[in-house]
Length: 395
Image (cartoon, rainbow, N blue to C red; front, side):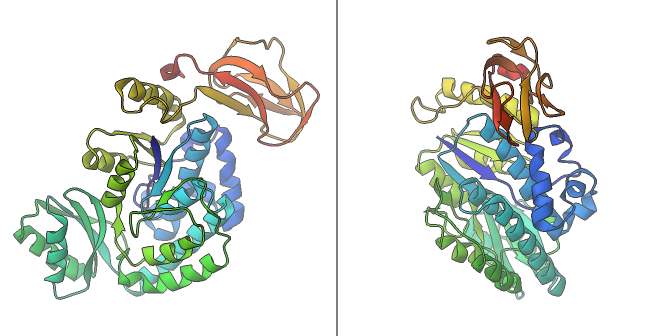
């Protein structure tokens, strides 16, 4: 069984949207810009590392990138059994599971980022990763410190993040080393996230959540706050509010997913941070990541290899090799000349037109059929043709 996991703040990189600009899923950027009243395309293509490091920018950019990747993966037919997201990534997981719409997700993430930025500006804080020390000893190091410092993330065995006042972080780091920590690594963030320092942001977020339609999940979503599966949409108002001031139980979540039968952890979005955590935490599981169109293509081959090796058991999860070509606009569809069943289609090849807009395949494969008739009026994103991948690794 596959779990879709989604990264949080800190996974962003400058230009992380460049590979997607010609992909059909890029259309989500315009929708996000409208919902947030922000220049999302600038964040994904032009913003430098310093601009992206700002909480209000990194959260929106990371969420939208994860949604682009999710949309592209969903077009292949790969489906998960469970969803989970790390911190900000929880909003991606909730969107993927249908608890919140994409537009509401953009609005919530925008408000969350602004609220956390304001809280951090009022009470500056930072974070640090403590490596090579048991969870209880990291907690002990924090409690031994005379200052505001708390455990913020339980990420993986021997990897715990602490957060708080900068001076208290230094003191807790020194205490952790005395208790046997191998390293204490500063994290370049501008706030003490997932601690009581975010109380003001929590109050703002609760107001935004009260105005949001929260639906029941179509697949279980594992929450950061308790590492438990949740289906009921209404429960997420309290869970998301509490998440801002409580530690992320990610290691516990990975174990809970594994106990529920997850054999493949698939990280969707920028970076590979969660993939590394899954490999360290769940022995024998397959951990994969998708962040570019090429990795979407390679995903199917990777899932095939995982199935053959026994990581995915027969009957637990079917992976698809079909690809849909969808309409880029509304208008009358006219297929290209020479299209026939089982002909080879190259990536970027024109297969027809909708009005004056060319229809290009975002994938390579063999044509299995047209899903719209010549002269039929179609709408944006309506499926027009379907392909079957052959040599997946070369797509």
